[in-house]
Amino acid sequence: MFIELSTYRWREHCGPYYDNKIGYRTETEFKKWKKLDPIARFTSYLINKKLLSKQELLTINTQINEKVDKELHRAKQSPLPMKPVRIFDVYAE
Image (cartoon, rainbow, N blue to C red):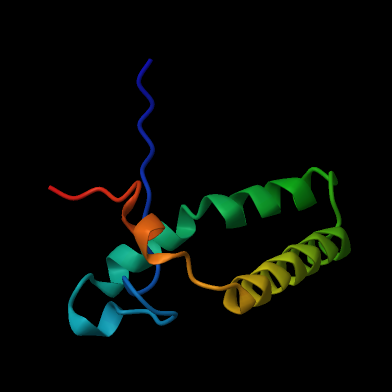
């Protein structure tokens, strides 16, 4: 079985900002892909088919953000792995 999935990176390689103004892509290209955003399209589908309300989706997003924030805080408070363990399962050519 072969599955091909087209994806698009909305933001910088490392950071929370858009990088459209540095010549990496055109604004036209960005807008084209933005219309194909699967999350936005699925959200619209759920609302249009009355499977979920906007309020229910907002509640779900809030719960997800709370879980992510909680786990991020936990990760930041956790100690780094011991030095010998840091080299396992690391790929390099």
